[in-house]
Length: 326
Image 1 (cartoon, rainbow, N blue to C red):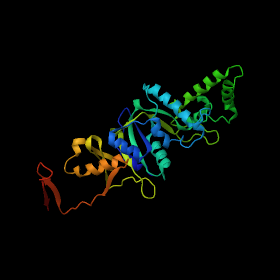
Image 2: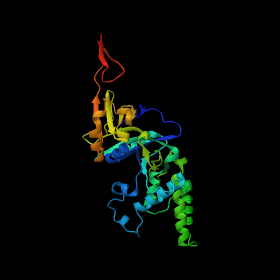
Image 3: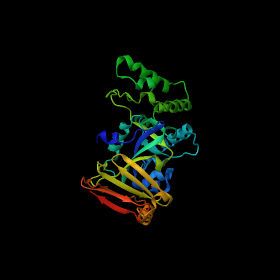
Image 4: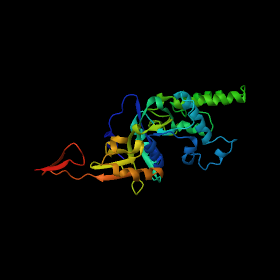
């Protein structure tokens, strides 16, 4: 995968974050049927890390499900959406190329999945450190901000670890206070000033940027920048120059998305797309969308001829005449 593929996209508008995510085709079908996809916990359960986890079924054991609940509570508070109990997860670094790389590697080989490039308003998403979130998954403390920026294996920095351990393991505090301090340490995952350089791994350094995740309560059809399906060999089928793709949905009757190597180049929603050109797609599109299937067709553009020029005259598509001139 080369960065050039993503350089073809239009620049991100101010106030938006260009994210990437891998979702099931059924999720995309729902988005193209309803115009908005807002998941519930029951929707996400079959596809999440909690699926098949015995610890998640035990109320006495902390596991992925509890970590997700904590994250959704944080997002609901930060976004001012008290009713939020689930969300869509993205790779959401401020530098978009990192999101493309992580998503590309995450999704390869997964059956029935689709890669989505999405522009999310920044006030609709909560970003956090993906690696540090895994400390919450195991219900453990997170190191201090100061210790995450430097190599604590060096003699001059080991005091930061000692101070951190002493603060969390203070024998003078109650178990309730210890639990509170642990929860307070989790807030470090939202600190974005370290993300360009990454969190320091004492054995590996921090030459790479942090992996940043984001959680949003919903996405809309208007958020879509590109939709990438799989090839037969389960790699991502990015469109090349001269290739195009049409994707049909049932928003407001019928919707048609046009894609090239530049991503989605236009969208026709509802009555704007029900003319003679696409009306024949309405019934099969509705049939497939009810089954959670994406109705799409890929085209290879014909080479343009330099010997003639083709154009249409007339106001009505059905009656317009095709003129071929030398």
